[in-house]
Amino acid sequence: MKYYKILMADKSENDIVGHCANDYGIGYDALCQGKEFLNWNDAFMFYYNKNEGDIPTDYLANDKGWFLISENLKELLEGMRVACQYFNIPIIEAVTNTPLNPYYGANILQMVDALCLDASEYSTMTVKKSTDVFHNIKKFAVHASKLNGIDVFKLATGSVFPIFVSQRFKDEVRKRNLTGMDFQEIRVVPY
Image (spheres, rainbow, N blue to C red):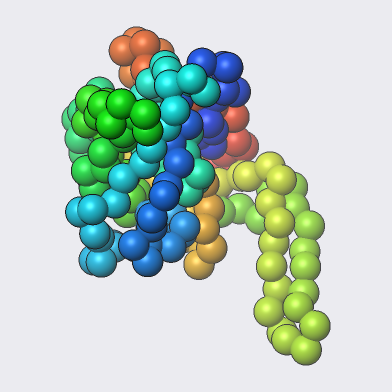
């Protein structure tokens, strides 16, 4: 099966971009690490200005870099039984205070130890006075044998890595005409 790194689609000039006015101490990586998040603040919201863009996408661009999703995309993830936390996040038009339909911060919890560095394209960085080595991965490769048909996952490597999806997920996105996403195919190594 083919797998893809999910990307934010190139923004059209009328797409909404959510902006955080107060993060209530919720860090930018809170919903990006693949770990359960327990300190959510229900007062959190994003704002947008309709004069800067008024088209809501199913994967909504935002200044936190979170997987901010519509009800339709949430239904797809739930139907595929993706391990995920969902946080209701109001998206408010800044001038009129009009809310959009429900949006959710999706925290993907399905972590898989499937990274194949041998077949990935990356550079290595070391920190001075440390033994830590960091990999800047340009093109990902994964071991097929470790995926077992999983449709949505993050790599269990201790870093904040992107979300990866199966061909099935991509096909469902296209079938349902969900917006705001592009897909970059990654290499799948059979062993």
